[in-house]
Image (cartoon, rainbow, N blue to C red; front, top):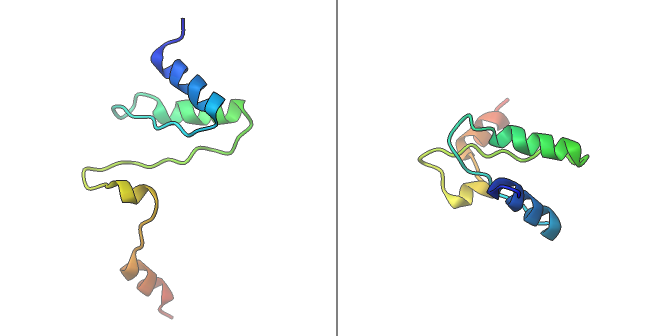
Amino acid sequence: MAGPVEQGLNVALALGQPLLLTGEPGTGKTQLAASLAYELNLPPPLVFNVKTTSGARDLFYRYDALGHFHDAQP
């Protein structure tokens, strides 16, 4: 019988939906995603490293106005 991670992967693949992997650092989340993408001939996964200051909106967009201003300087 498949474990919960394998079941989640199978459901996400069957539905064509993304799967959010969570867990402690060093447990293999990024490696699992990279290996699965490789096996399915897909592009590398998107990786978002969460911090205590991270919010849901950070998953979509973060604009660094000061960095943008600095980059625009001659």
